[in-house]
Image 1 (tube, rainbow, N blue to C red):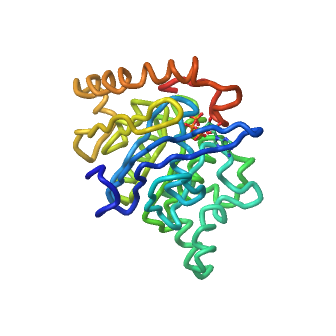
Image 2 (cartoon, rainbow, N blue to C red):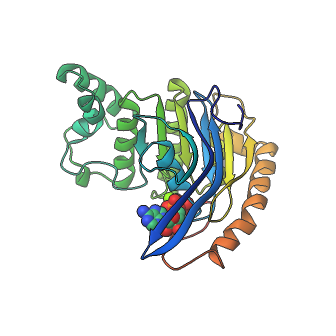
Image 3 (cartoon, rainbow, N blue to C red):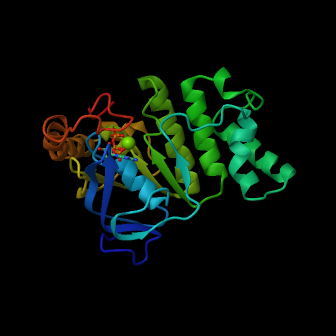
Length: 275
Ligand SMILES: Nc1ncnc2c1ncn2[C@@H]1O[C@H](COP(=O)(O)OP(=O)(O)OP(=O)(O)O)[C@@H](O)[C@H]1O
Ligand SMILES: [Mg+2]
């Protein structure tokens, strides 16, 4: 695990900047952001609202291009978005099978695959339901199942559990942990929750206020398989405190000077950490 470019890493950004124009005004979303993600690792990205986390993730997945810098992007990475990540016109099973269908997998095979994933995320019995018939937590399960079922070795998740109530979120964190520990895909996950990052990640990257840069990189030492009990480990409290100390000033900066009007994109309602 190194932060020096793309050697031995499937996924990396080096010195990446991103310039947007909003109503003719230039906005630097990222400036000199550097990330290297080791194959099969779980990396969490945390940072104040509007600091460029989603932009960085989209650049790593090739949905967006960097203005400057070098990117080793993951072609065909599976995305999980915070909300609206499932197709409303497709039944659960067809949503989960979507990636496999795009990849040309035969119907019988992809149906079997999708059934397995629907079961693994606890949605057995809802194969034929449409998304609008499901709760928010169930819809996110569909999105997560679909991402894993694509077979892509790289998963890019943008606050996948951010819109859920606290209890559903805890439940899905445990499920995600269990699934990932079995699959060991390369995951980069954006989250606002320090606890979630420490529960799930091998590593936590902390970003500065916009224009975002990666300002710190912390190894998460807890052995796997992990469970919620890590939260009782004194080291957990220690790490949580360290990350919050790193973030506090950045969050304040993003709320004060950093916030040109309308700059925080979709998730900008709270600006807070730990939701
Ligand atoms: N397509 C775009 N056009 C113009 N500006 C954009 C565009 N996408 C993002 N931005 C701006 O870039 C900055 C970073 O946005 P981004 O969505 O990456 O932040 P974020 O860290 O994901 O925020 P949040 O935590 O609120 O989700 C913001 O100022 C945002 O307004
Ligand atoms: Mg975002």
